[in-house]
Image 1 (tube, rainbow over the protein chains, first blue to last red):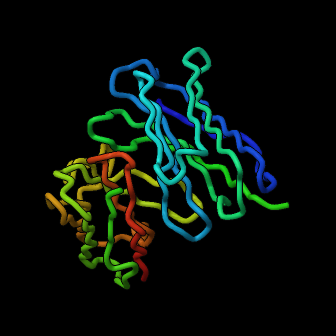
Image 2 (image 1 turned 120 degrees about the vertical axis):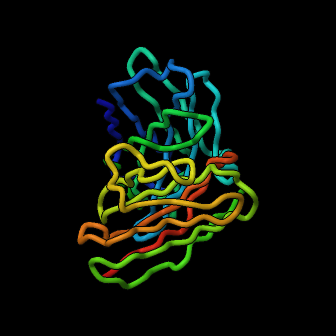
Length: 121
Length: 106
């Protein structure tokens, strides 16, 4: 049974760095084809893909956010960490981590419950 | 980035209706198209992958078709729990991108 859960601050100040952790179980991020990444959704708006890290340590980022994003994995802890610098109120959103069982297909078959991050002074 | 355009942005329907949602890509994405269902306040749920493959456990009233740039999600016989929001997503190239969503309302 695959599960993912996001954790981190619910409130950050403008210009601060956001660090979110995705803790997962039921699969290994060492398995060929598997990836874990981040998608966000501002209140009342659409989903936005942020980036993914894959079994072979390949990392893909949204070009519009690439300069601010870092995604890393800790295989021993079954965790993936998102770091986003220079936070702004427009970054207020629910942040989801998601599992992809097949890099070549790109499907997102398991999702965490999401965590709402508010950016405000 | 590949842009995904969904239409309509919202639609009104009744229980038992057949509805179709369209997703258009800004360039050919072969069959790398997924559909998700999202209930308010919840994470999206994968319905269909690779354009037309039904995810395990998803009712057969959901179906997908298309190729290249034009894709459709069809729900045959709307049930009360289907009145939520649907998103398409392409995975032909990163960044994987989503459509803006279609809200199905009573």
